[in-house]
Image (tube, rainbow, N blue to C red; front, side, top):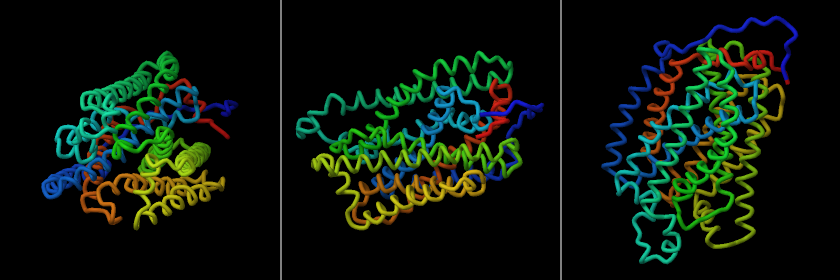
Length: 401
């Protein structure tokens, strides 16, 4: 809802000046240092490097997918309240081609590729199960799917941000109308490609395992971390004197959505576990057997408490959701738990007996994060921080709930 019963002065465009941010100077340095250390790690232990590099890639790839989802949802619902924050997500969308370059080492070098996706190194003639899946699990079709994923996410990301920025120049509402009309089909394509990308890369770490709920589970974690990322970036920008027209009503709405999608993630994650436990089929239970052996079971319990119980209890209070400081703390915590969850999912394949992370896990995460963080700041600087001539800007400025 919004209140239009009084005169309102529209805010002037706000722009990011990269030179004002310390991160603009720090991130290139950490990216170079991390890149050198990553190369050393690949030469010393290419198996650990392969898993660590994929871990870092997928952490940020899911954030990008979450940002894309929230942009599409905005246009599907023809929403108005989030116009002031929409560009925080839109500025992520041009990074998909860079994410492809980050994934490239795992696609180019057979030693790394066969380590992460083991079916590449096996012959269907010698494995009956792989032979049954050979129509899907074959190199040509795999690389074709990779091309389709990034072609769609890259092009549609460019399309949505470009047209949003065009509206800043001419104020023509036709851009909003077009994006709204196209968003229905775009959302369907997003759901399908997000699901199959998760099957190929994330679930494909163990190609023998399958779960009919895995696509929904992957979507849940993407949507949750996409909102958490937005809250943290908004807090960072506010701390630098930008986006001053955001108020407690915007924070409250972001907090409610973060609360709701935390529960949705937990519903999918627990639903997947419950269905697999109840069916008791070896091809399905193998995943939870492998991820709850030894010390890894303690990380499972930590996820239940740290990514579901604590955030839900914390976000129950209305005052918490209306305070940007309090909201940023829990959003930052959810980002941390997102990293923990992907570590719990991926690293048992690298070292099943030890829960302790390798130094390469930290190095690759910092390296990939620095590259993408620097690129994100540069993208932000190319357009105003919010759509200054969006037809629903007044609704966002006067929102109440």
